[in-house]
Length: 336
Image (cartoon, rainbow, N blue to C red):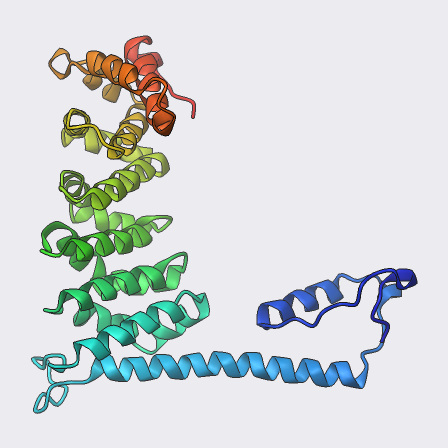
């Protein structure tokens, strides 16, 4: 088979090194013009067969690795015999943590995430590890739930059906370990973004109130990620703005902006911008004299001038000034 392109001016094609490369090669070949098609040499056919076998063997090996990890996670204390009241094996948290870590790496692959659920792995996370007494196992379990659920509707649905949302919200709201709360928030975001069933569970379980309390946490990472999720939920689901206003969200966001200045304020201001966009009720609440928001925004703009690292926050302040204090509420809108 000719290795070069037309006229022999093209460099030889390199053989793909993985399954994705093989698929790309197949797509390229399928799009070739009839005049470009050539019979496959025996050597190339043999190479392709071996490469495909190796790729699928790798996939099967990863499934076996997941099964072994699940055997570690399913281990019970002597005498438990798998009964309802049995506890995870004591003395093995390091092995269990390693198993959860490996599963998280494997489940970055969407096919592996689906296989993990078929192996009943999500049930094990929901029923045992999200409430495990060892904090490291709780945060690794929450991280794995989120990793599996990202952009995979079937996995999201299974996690929701197993009650993961309620347990994750409880972890976010009450867990004593900061890293557990951060990972729980990550998993929640993976279950509500672009997943209507997850959002409905989030709303029924008063998720916005939990998110607001997380934004009031002293943990900077948790505050930033909570505000960012709130901002995106408002952009994606503006129909819930009235509910948030009735909860006093405008007043609580303004109170957060009044705290000692930090990079977190950019995300709070972004959430407030999202809340008042095309929503006159939110604008009217921002204009309440007791909030003194206009003066606060003016002072903040002065503080941020000429500070390049805070330009996004400055833009949010300027937009809030325009929308809330330079335009009648009924005509307010915001273009971003």
